[in-house]
Image 1 (cartoon, helix red, strand yellow):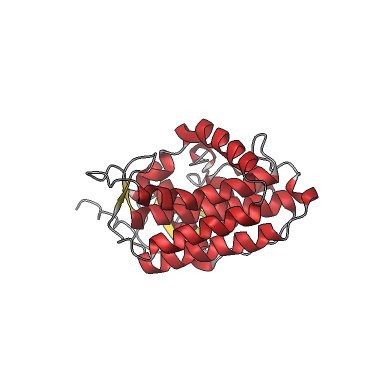
Image 2: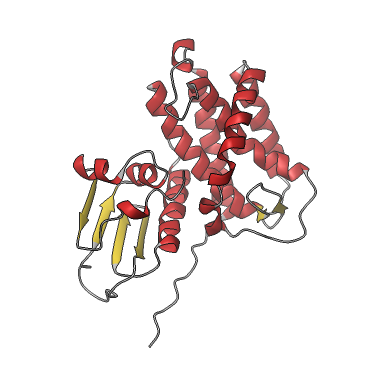
Length: 264
């Protein structure tokens, strides 16, 4: 009997919309409290400062409004699970655009207020199946908003670590980010010999090899959501996470070091 095909995970569009707005609101409040000294610190992302990182976070949301203002594409080009692997090519353009945005918008409070107002207004009437001409390829609004949870959660964590801030992570946004990156691993390394557990949000099977059917899997990886997100996006190296006991890995097929990061 052939192995059962894995079902593609679905997301509740209404909950994702709330999550995106909630997390952007969390970031807006957190950035408002940052001092000039904190904003001047290195962001640990290339040559960006914390100020530039804070400006970049608005881009993650403004792209939704901007794409809703553009003509709708004729056909969908990118599925949700294609997106994590389509972002690396845009790194140079993103860096240039971020520096320009930070330079042109020294008043971060005003920038965040404007971006929040625009997306709130546009999401009020935009249907979930509306196609957006994203730079990675045309996607539905519903799918694109799931990718925004990744951008917001990843960079909120970056901001917290670089600025010494404590901006909270919306639970639904964190869950969606964790699940999308876990599913991306299963796409990159299809199989069912290894079980990756990221409680309480995700469990996926991946890596070619003997298929596990019952009892405790012979190859198990387990970690927390933030560590997983840092591994998947290259913020933390596999060996470092193992050495610091942030991840446990048992079994001969439980070494994910060669598969990470998933996103640059």
